[in-house]
Every structure is written in structure tokens, then in C-alpha cells.
Amino acid sequence: MNMRDVILENVRKNQPSPRELPEVSLFHFEQAVDLKTLFTASLKELTGEVVTEPPPDFEQFLRARFPDAKTFCSAVPEYAGNSKPEDFVSWADAGNIDVTIVRSPLGVAETGSVLLSEQEFRVNTIGFLAHDIVILLDPSEIVENLHDAYRHPHFLDNAYSLLMSGPSGSADIGGVSVHPAQGVMTLTVIFWPRAKQH
Amino acid sequence: MLAKAKSMLTEECETTRFLESRGIRVAETDLGERIQQLDDQPPSHIVGPSWHKTPQDVAAVFAKAYGSDKDNADPAYLAGVMRENTRPLFLQAKAGMTGTNFAVAETGAIVTVTNEGNADLVANVPRLRICSVGLEKIIPRNEHLAVFIRLLTRSATGYSITQYTSHFRAPRQDGEMHVVLVDNGRSSRLGMEKFWPSLKCIRCAACMNTCPVYRRSGGLSYGSTYMGPIGIIMMPTFDARRYSELPFSSTLNGSCTHVCPVKINIHEQIYAWREVMEEKGQIQLAKKGAMIVAGKLLSHPQLYRIAASSAEPSLSLLPRFAIYNRLNAWGKHREIPQPGNETFHDWYKKNRSGAACEDKKQ
Image 1: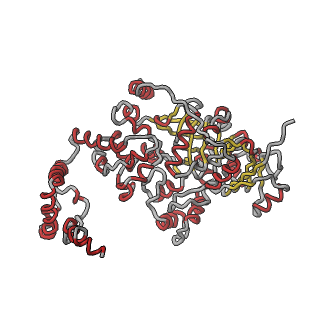
Image 2: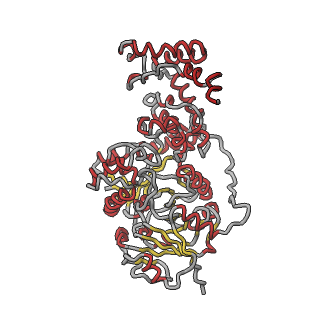
Image 3: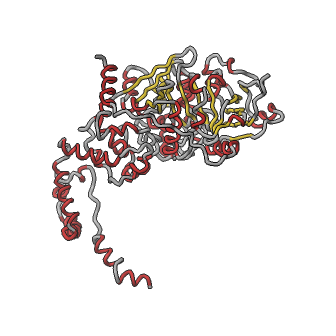
């Protein structure tokens, strides 16, 4: 027997007696909550920010928010930017991006998380090698908690799915949570309804 | 070069040392883990590997390794130094390696939880990706992840989630992903009636944060990969002889069991391990003798008082060889503290009981 078989045999032999899998409830609040308000408060916990309406002039909004930024990589139809994910043939080159703009298909109110995957990023590294990230989210696509979130088909279909809940941070020095860490320095979510499909 | 995200499993298997002996450079990318790597020290905590270091200590480590300002101990400045110096490592690495917080049987997903996003970088920038998974990290279904992610982050950091919760089911386009399922004694532990529940551990470190022994002595003092209460019950499953003394590094107050989110009966297992060590003859004779004497003294108040009040004069009068010898296992590595001039009992009688208390009230 090779080691793999030995280990598997050991696992079978030593298995505690089987039991039924428990039913996992969705653990919803007893009274309905305003998901947009809860999402905003939760995201703030890990220093992410919410903009509650689409800015009238998005270009101007971005320039004002990121005055030193030069490369805007857009993965959304709402804004052209001056680069797109496919420009970064080598995934390591995404380190040249100042601001990435992407749309999330799902927000989680309990944790202030947004779901992102290779479907939205197209080149995954634009999500962490960029200096800052701006995420468009249709507020009608916010669910209450993680139990709802894990029902999203992304987790079954995609090679890579990420629940992002704030800009990259670290509390490894002196127990104080600080930026920068390895990924994006700031994370902004804009409540921006999805364009109606015709 | 291999860029690596934090993984206790690879610490357990001494993966880095093995790879480096084969000529592969390994760069830790988690901030705390990198600090420890640069300082050539193992992690002292499973969530914050360098939490025993002050910001000044980190400034000194970075000044030596990166030439940064040794007098600037601002955590944000130091994190910036790390980012500047680690970014090139991610971009150059030919392979990336991460551990696994959970692996989902239903979807084949490897799930990592980080606040820095370094696991995502390690897994997405190089084309070759390796994940190590302890066998016990496999959970049945995707819907169960919600339960475990909620438990893990709340118990580890107090927040409802960590910045990056990432799910990898397949390699990136034109990349490779290799999953290494590691046993290292886990499948045998599964068969140990008393000790298998330690396999439920999700590595949140809540037991360490509450443990009075861990809090005073720090993680490095355990001399083992896993430290604190969970370390005490896990390490002897790897090597009962080498870690025979660990089960005694506990007050058995049970606060570890109380805070454990996956309900491991940690303090009961610590006690059970003491019994195992006794059965295996792993307790030194001198220690055993001392415990019998202590047991007698502590159950007889009068004997105890006589012993306590004679400790001060005898410790001051006896020559050194009479105190520090083979019978005093405690004094092997450290000095006995100087006892006070009076016993606590005498002091209490004088200051707190009866008349003394009444005087103070007036």
C-alpha cells in the first residue's frame, strides 16, 4: 500500500460514528432591517466607504477622489477609464494600476462584503495590485448575511471567488490595524443600480 | 523563488527549511510571519506571529534587513516598508504557496482568510500555485462555510469578517494548482477516543488570548509549533515524549474550553494528557515527589502554615547547593524569588481581620 492508501484507510477505520448533517438555518433577524444602512455600517468597521448615489459626473468624481492617479482600469460598461483588464497580459503588470473600477453582483449587509470573481475582474490581479479600488453595487443585490451569500452560484461556478470586506490592512505590529498592507489602500463601494437589460 | 502566505501547517512540517535545503528561496508575505522570518524566530501566536514584539523591536528588525529608519516605530510606516520590499517578491516569484482555512468537499474550494490579501496575491500572480491542507480542514458543503467563517473571524479578531475571504476551486487560466492533503498523525488522532476532538480546531487562537499562562509567558516559551492551550493538547499527539511537560503548563482554570467556538473540551484534555504522561512514566521523579509533598501540605492547613513560615528563614540560611539541586526541578532554569518577611497569612491577620478592619472603617 502506498502512503495515500494508508492514510485513507486510517481515516475510514478511525471515523467517529456517522451522524446526520444538521440543517443550517439562514439565521435572519427577527425584524426586517434596512440592508443598505447595515451594509454601510459594517463596511465602515474595516475602513471601507460607501457612496450612496451614483455621482453625476463619474470622471470628475474619480479625479477628485484620487488626485494623483493616472491609470484607471475599468472593468465596467458604465465608465471607459484609460485601460481595461485585458491590457495586462502578464498578470504581474497590474501593479501599474492606480484605480480599478469593477462591479460586484452581491453585497452582504452583515459583514459589508462584496463578492468578486474572475467573471468581474477578468484579470484577477487588478483587484489587489491596484492602489485603490472602486466597486459598483446595485443596492437591490444586497443580502442580509453570509448564509444568504453562500447560496450565490459564483461559489459553485467560478475558479476564484472573493468576499472583499475592506481595504488590505494589518494588525501585526503593535496590534494596531493599519494601511498599507499588501493589497489596495482604499476601498469605495458606490450604490449604483445595474442598467436594465433590453 | 516561492512566495508564501502564512500557514501553521507548513510550520508544523518545517516546509520552509526543507525547501531551502533544496535551493528554493522562500519569502513569507504575511507581515507578522515576515518579521519572524527576518528575525529567524518561529511564530509566537497562530493569528499574529509577531505580537510579542513591540513596534520598536520591529523597527530594529526592518532597519537591519531593509535599511529603514530604526528610530521610526510608527506601525503605518513599518507596514509601508514591508509593502515596498515585498511587492517585488510577489511579482518575481515563480510559485506561490498558501495554507488553507477550510476546504469544501462539495465544491473543491480551498478557502483562505487574510486581512492583507497576501494569499490572493500569492495565488494569483505566479502561474504555479500550491495549497497545503490539513486533513481536518475539510468541511462537507458550501452552506457550512457561512457557519465556520462567522465563527473564525469573530473568535480570532472580534470583527464579523476579515478583509479577504477567498475561494479557489481551480487554477487561473493557463496556470497550475496543486493541493497537498497533509495527514502528519491526524488520521491516527481521529482514532484516539479522548483526544480526537482537537481535530475540530479552526485555529482562531481564542484559547490563547484567554489563557493566563499564555498571556504571561508568551508563545515562544512553549517551544512547540502550536502554543497555548490548543498547543498543549495537540503537540503530544505528534510526539508524547518530546512534549511530555507541556500538559503541565496550565492552571486548568477552563477558560480555554469556555471560549472555544467549536466546543473542544480543552482543559479536560489537558488533564487527560497529564494522566497519559504519568502512565507512560514521563514525569520526572523529583517533580513527582514534589507534587506528593505539595499535595499533603495543601490539604493540611496547619502543616502548610508551618512550612510557609519556615520557608523564608530556610531559603535565606541554606547554602546554594541545598536549594538548587536535582530535587528542585523548578530551580533548574531560574532563580527562586526572595520570599517576603512575613507570610500572607500573618499579613492578612494583621491588616484585614477583625479589629484591623474595624479601625480602618472609622
